[in-house]
Length: 261
Image (tube, rainbow, N blue to C red; front, top):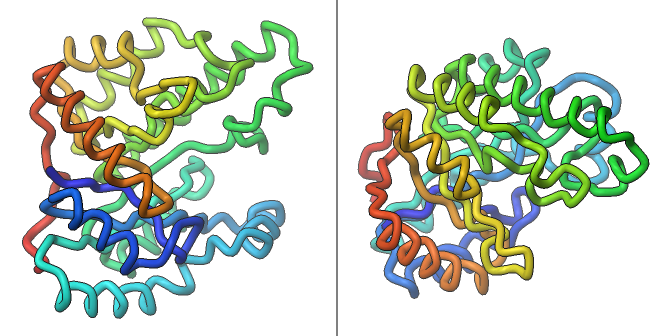
């Protein structure tokens, strides 16, 4: 089993070595560092990067040297990847940066709709039902654009808004089908994401109903624990292994990945 989605201290996770050690302890064959990145030039995004330190576009070469060192010390595969915030307005900048940086693979994710992070419930608490439905619709339209851009190997947590009570359960089967068709026509694969699977909410991305639609369209999947701390990797990896066994899924490796150890 390989985990293609963990974070390090180069965004909002723990130290590289600690994360690799945890992956090795649970017997993973590979682990991929996909730290957050945003290359939008708009003022709000530039300000958020300064506040939260999500500056992989400036630090990826330093992180890459750290990963190269760890490859000498550990036997498992260690991947040099990225989780890039996607907005259709930023496609040219994203394309230019990914082409320049040459990561092992790229994960694309939709976190913001109309300037609101879809994981922050307070952004949507005072909205009307119609306004919330419009946010959900815009989320899936943006996700489809992400897939059709062909910029990414993996689409992260494809129903991220399920984490947010005001938006949870509002997606429609038609929206799922449109995303599934886009994925079926693309090289991009969605992940089974365990980032909230072991919380009280017990949310697996994609949800059971979304996964059913993806399987109807013969869409392949890959795996990501979305871990930010070493203690999260073992339990989430075990969960994903059991999930794959129970569902009969056969996860794939993203295009372009070759041996790095």
